[in-house]
Length: 298
Image (cartoon, rainbow, N blue to C red):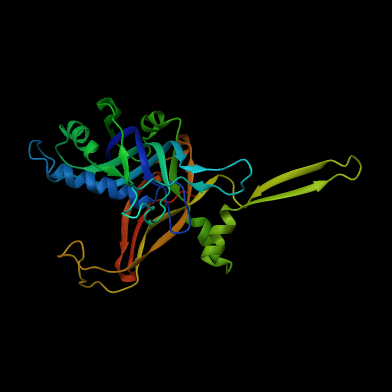
């Protein structure tokens, strides 16, 4: 099945939200990137001076990280790291106002957007002029060149080498929900399965003859595996509430859904489906998820 892809290469984002889930700090959640693609889609559809974009739809989003810097500080005598918070203006009494600490990060990433539109002659020019007006993951998009945006057409899912060559060096984010599913089939709790997978265990042994101590570091799974937020589950029925942001859309309370994901090098991708994330709502179970249609088992 042929695919049209919009590639935005090595986009630099400053002060993005690093609260990847309610339980973890790190790479921004999947919902942030699909939300950014949806916001870009809506802005492009409103561009009246470009032809053929009113029916533009971004279906899938691929995420490739090239550089990541978390705003934290660690003294030489400290074990834990501290969040570098913003310096808010003083209040009337001359004291710092109360605020919720938000972890921030700077990152460089490439986005692969699968799109569907018959006329995409003006798409690159429209994206170039529209993207700087938006935020991504709550962060500011730094100036970029028009040459960083390109279009690709793949005749089938396996014709991916022309894309992966442009993504090196980098790390593609893929879903690893299969790890948690396997652990939970043995009776393990979901949170315990997540923590056991990402924890690092240190152990040491001492040779009685040489009195030499050797340290070993182990993980349950090989690879760069992280917890990541992929959506929400509704915990209240849709209803109207006071002062809701959209008066025409029912409001409901929800809690985050967290699973495992893995960073892999682009050359390990076998098909384009291995990297693309899609909205996959399950309304019967009150789930609003971002998932991959073909989760990788490598």
